[in-house]
Amino acid sequence: MSPSDMFEDSPIHVDSILAIEATVDDMRSQNEATHRLLQDVLDKLGPTQARNMPDPQQRLVLTYTRFLRGAEKELS
Image 1 (cartoon, rainbow, N blue to C red):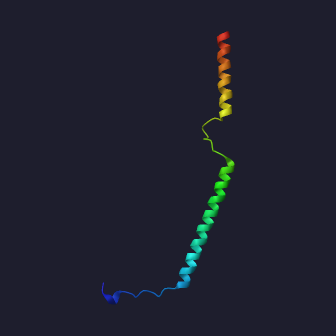
Image 2: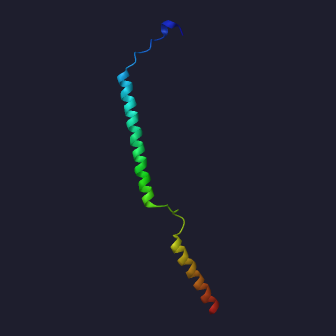
Image 3: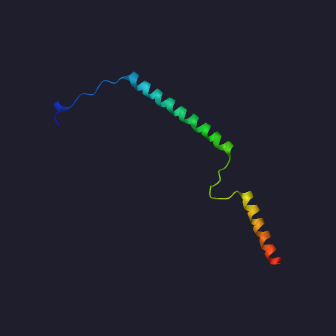
């Protein structure tokens, strides 16, 4: 490429760069605030339980019921 085919750099527009930097900073602070809010909500909800796992209390009842049915069969 010959030097005549090259373009000179455009002048720097400091105002545009400052506006972009301010926008990026604002987006970062909004992201951090959103992250804190979501984390607070998750903390209030407590630990999650897998959908394919029974409730521990329900599991205890089912185990006890099966135990009683087994004991009834042994007695009859």
